Structures are given as structure tokens and as C-alpha cells.
Image (cartoon, one colour):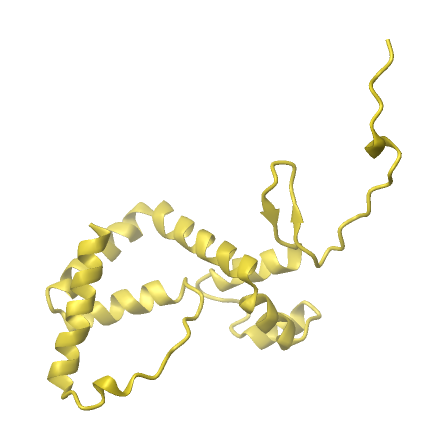
Length: 158
């Protein structure tokens, strides 16, 4: 019995360089191994080594390469996905974080600081835009504005 012949049987496939993203059999993008290792390091706590520069040197890379990775949309998307995955998978930690969030939305400034510092270390850095429209606010008015934003986010999250 003859097997059907396809043009792909005769066309050699080019291997994907180890520093390029590739698609797996399901069509999902897979990041290169070094980027994956770096992302694992980014999401680790504590970090060993403790700086990106040292991590880059340990892996034979320039710091600018890491900066390029962190600005890549596919990398950032995978970073976000893994950060959410880690945050959800640890039930005890999640309960503590929920408690901190509740306290923060009720006006506990210290809880808000802890909550934000926890969440921020797992997320890609955000672009900060200068907004002079709040420059005239007093510390109390600014704190009230921040708390209203936290409360609004909490209502959206459920």
C-alpha cells in the first residue's frame, strides 16, 4: 500500500535557531531556552544571582539583550501568563494576598504598600507617565485618590 506523498516530504526543514521563538506542534509560541531560564529567574524569590547584570554575565549575555527581551511583546505576554499562573497556584499565599487587598481597600495604607510590593515584583515593569494634574493635591487628597482607585479595582475584580 503506497503512502500519500506530500511536497513537505521533499523540502528540508530549517532548524529554528536556539535564540528565536518557534511554534510547537499545537501552534503555540515557545520561547527560547535562555529566555525561559531568565523568566524563571525573574519570577523567583529570592533571586540568585540578585541582579540582572550578574544573571546576564553568568549566561554569557549582554545586559542589553535582556532589555530587548523584556521589551518583546511575546516575552511580556509569557511573563504575564506565568506570573498569573504562579500567583493563582499557591493557595496559602493567595489567601494572604486577598486579606491584604481587603485591608488595603478599607484604607489600611500599610496593607496597600505590602499588597502592591508583592504584586509588582511578578509583573512586567509598567511605563510611568507624568501627570501634573495631581501636583496641586495635598498628601491627604492624593491618598484619598489612590484609595478610590484601589477600591474601584477591587470592585472590578469582584
